[in-house]
Length: 246
Picture 1 (cartoon, rainbow, N blue to C red):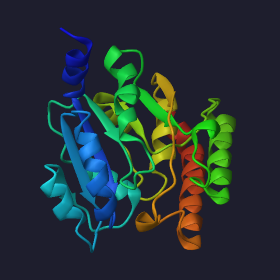
Picture 2 (picture 1 turned 45 degrees about the vertical axis):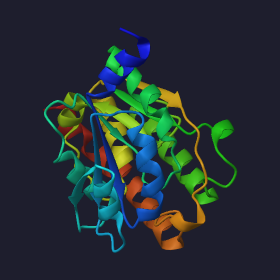
Picture 3 (picture 1 turned 120 degrees about the vertical axis):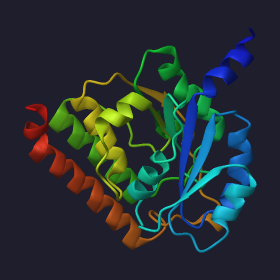
Picture 4 (picture 1 turned 90 degrees about the vertical axis):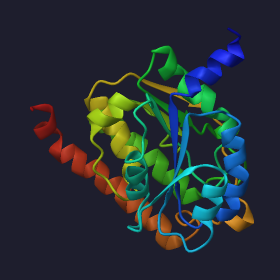
């Protein structure tokens, strides 16, 4: 069996969840690139879009789940409800083309090989396109990983949205957040459960004009995201004794 054939067979056990809110334009470009990677299933979690997000996703052959309740975590959680039994690995990628879908094989590979349970696509400074992360984003990201280091003793480099996790590990985490604390909750709970964690450096690109961010593209969105990340860290810190003593 060739290496390419083996890789495609292993990716057939991977389901990709894409939370999306009014991302029809970017999905027209993203989905064909993602389909080229041959994952077993692509799920677009439509978070109450008013454009053609659902139609574009359906036309590309993706599974579409509708979650009108706004929130990044709500959309991701809705996507989890459509996972097929055959999916051993679950990957998450944003719909806005900031993440490179060609990095999917590299991100899921440590899990497929059995060396990791959670793999984070780390947006290293040298791989970020200029302007891809605003100053508030960089500050909030750095603060969050510093808080995790203080509270849980692990040095993360990023809260990057491109990530993959073993299906059984995701079930064990039992995600609770339905807003913008989703990524930080996953990373903190992974530490508490003793999961094997790895990171893969990935490029990060500026959004195109037609895909202005609903979060970092507005002051309100940036403040809300920062609020949810910080309050999620605080909530998990104050309640960790209860979880760890179960």
